[in-house]
Image 1 (cartoon, rainbow, N blue to C red):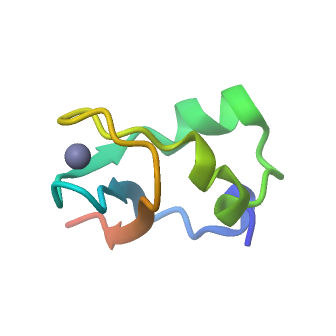
Image 2 (image 1 turned 30 degrees about the vertical axis):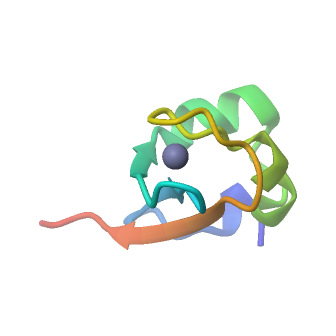
Length: 67
Ligand SMILES: [Zn+2]
């Protein structure tokens, strides 16, 4: 799945495998940086935990924007 294919009402976040910190990212800003057709799963190596700095084995999570 690419960033463009992710429904507009979903937000994207990363979850750290080391400290279980969760953080949501600005998916529109990400799309501007890597392109709307970047495959989301392929961006996992670029995830870095903002709490402990861990870069390995992090995972994506998605959530719905509350209306
Ligand atoms: Zn962490």
